[in-house]
Amino acid sequence: MISTGAPVHFLALEAGVRQFLDVGTGLPGVQAGRDIAQSVDPACRIVHVDHDPMVLSHVRAFSRSTPQGAIVALDAKLTDPDALLARSAPTLDFRRPVAVLVPSTLPFIPSTERAAAIVASLVAALSPGSYLALCHVASDLDPALAAGVESWNKMSSQQFTLRSRTEVAGLIAGLDLV
Image 1 (tube, rainbow, N blue to C red):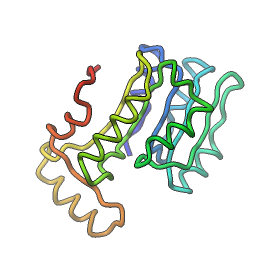
Image 2: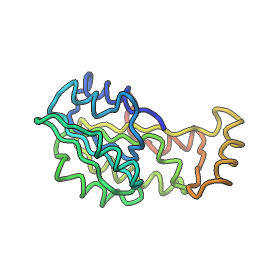
Image 3: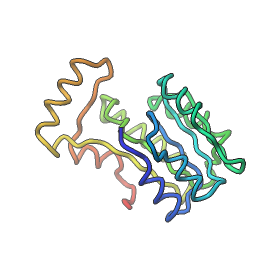
Image 4: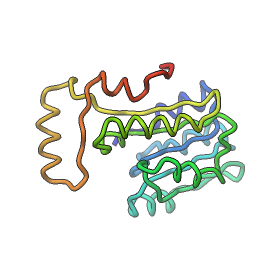
């Protein structure tokens, strides 16, 4: 799992974002994004979204928000962005800038068209000044990736989809890169 620490640091410190929607949270590392965000501004509001009960339990057990901010863990899936956004609305004000973090979860969406539609739904809900930070392995980075993904897919019920750099760029078409 890719750490959200560096993007959160940039978004909170340099871009001034104070609301974060972390979709596909995964188990937090040593410097969890929520800790970084609230160290920049204790009033930061963070919604962690995952559908893995172990991840949610861990996030709930170890998340300690500052009194001024909020940290919430939601059981939701990236495949239902409308429900995910609606359930995040009590914590996040989508009329103000929000940073949506999608760390390494889009490869688990088999259809590139569906992945693009999910990204478009998330981006459509954002106000001006918002950001999307995502990580997606590109199939043309290293020929060994295909063999590794093939092995993974033989062993796992969660299938992983590699996409080319062009396909990944298509997921964020129309957005300005930072």
